Length: 309
Image (tube, rainbow, N blue to C red; front, side, top):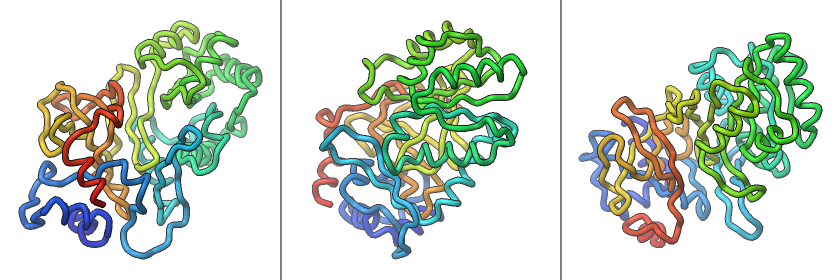
């Protein structure tokens, strides 16, 4: 509630959004009272508090000619600290892992927050073998085989299409390794469900489970799944599910809705973001992502307010 009060005053875009909604700040007394900023506004506006210039600008991926999101980050070191602490809350210190990053679509462009985080993970690792792999799948396969044989704690984090490429060209036993997908085919492959992706990777890599990371350009915090399809947020991350046709009403547990993300680390931007991700939440706060709402299907106040801003 303190962050909401701060951003309602210091974030000029959010302040205008609240004004258009005729929000009475004195009546915002709980999480469900807080209006969430439509994520599309990161594509058309600068979402930042105060006048401190950003030290880094993260950008989303997009097809040629499409408008991408921009996240103006005042303190990138804070982002990295949050990322390290968030990972440690699930897996322990990143320094204890050999970190192998297979992120070709992200490495091939500038401004990826995921690459920024992965680079910090690699830097913090005690293993000199840690590093990025762009297209050297053979070299990655050999390093994975070495780590598997020698029981070296290893995190393989990769974009979905690249992990599938690796699984097809170099199927092998990775049962001692954490394989973590970040989602997305990036136009390189036909889209498939997360269940299909995990089933394929578990078979070809002999894995008991495939892990997942949930994050986005507009956020500083992450959520993780240890293999059951349900994500849990890091300590600064929480999700609510709103009605598809009414952005200011919330659905009951395990009913499909659109995800509202609270990211308390996003203190210098906006901590309350209405995403276009479809999902459901259980009674303990864990959530699933089951798809994304197409922009053409969005109706109601979100679009009207976006157009006004």
